[in-house]
Length: 496
Image (cartoon, rainbow, N blue to C red):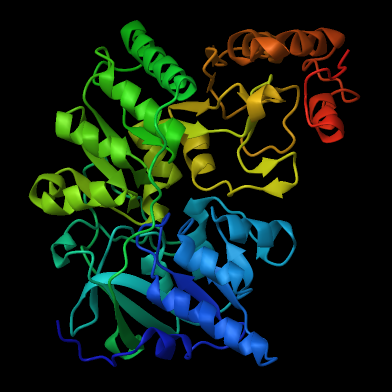
């Protein structure tokens, strides 16, 4: 592979950055993140700090990344600003300790924020690719994220060619940016399989500062084995959706599905694949993980539109060995398109996301533990929840060996309010909140979703205030949280 661009080592690429530069990285989850250059930037930061010189950068990505990007940079104290999402324990610690300023954003809004200068000048875009043409045409790897916007807005671009990804990925991407306001046109997607953009990024050759070559795997963690709890959550979701279809509230041909990433999401999709009353369906989602590809092979999933292929190494190898099969069934788009409210609403997407905690009225916390400590960020869950035809949140009813109830009187941080959340599912059961008043929702969530160890407590809370439209008692709304902070156990909280 020959390029008419400067060949750089990772260290040479890292040396081009300056302290306080704003840097955009390709990625969406650990998929498609540049790893060799990121590690070199972390090493550069350590060297600069040891020499007594300041060196920190702002980091903009599509979503979370892997340990070679967020983890390495956090441990090197190389970041002063991070947006819009993260999942690395070291980056999370730095954010919660106040060492890194974190801007939590709906993922559909990131590209527009970059284009309109919310984060100031973008000094560098660092993009992972599998192919690069002399004309500056770039074939991305396993994700898109906000890469098109980053390369358009950045002053200079560094391309990391990762040879673990085949050049035959060309054609799997559909790259499209909506026009700038106030002249933006409708996003013309009528089916999950529609293509409206280009297969490659096009970068002015003079903008490319250099090319780094690497051979580093995407750092996608393997999924845990399905447990009894996640299996029951999955079965509850699948049976609820099948019943909705039988009742006619979902069309017989079904609707496209969006699913978050993780063990619960994996179990839910697996259960949907096994349910005889759920027909073949399409995915219109942010990520395609291992369970989706298994369903493609069985024929249960007909097509998947996504930002990223978030697959374990073994699954990624299977995909790359059978690209002719998957090319007809997958398209990767920018998150500005996958998460676009207009498209989600038009297609009638069923959204299925995971909560940290839910309250009895239907409010959902998906980002913060006890209202203050960030876990990951809101990601795209709000984009889909607010605009879905049917929005579902799942979580186990208890955590920490039964010391924490995930069903509480009032969530300690609100990411998705009761007006957007249709259904809550735990291993205990399903609460369909549609068409229910706050009093009805409180009873339903308590009886259907709460763990038996906490039901009496939640009943007492709901009965303590019978006046008003919403039976909320501020004196006891956070009694379970406060009990845990005092004793390390929510059980025994006094709420009435």
